Length: 107
Image 1 (tube, rainbow, N blue to C red):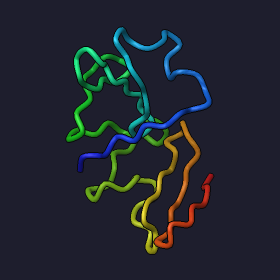
Image 2 (image 1 turned 60 degrees about the vertical axis):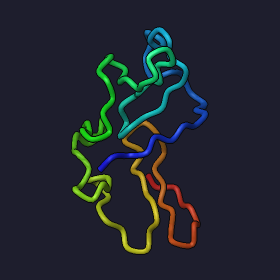
Image 3 (image 1 turned 60 degrees about the horizontal axis):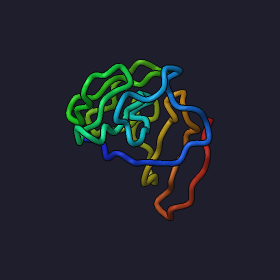
């Protein structure tokens, strides 16, 4: 299942000590894997330079597992009464958004 890319302003350094690749216009994470938007090429690439393909997931950098067939984080699975959830993948804080859109942090 293709995952939508969500951009955010992170209050910590770029995911690579080497800095962003040439032409990078922004960055985010997909299952804990850093990806960059390469402006001149109009595409995403992983920090290792491999093109990002939303139809071929990489495993979570924290647990090493792929998402479930439904697209859930493997460590969380399906959570009844939950609209959205993320384990944080060892990079960000995890969260659970309930059907009423109340958000709770998870460790």
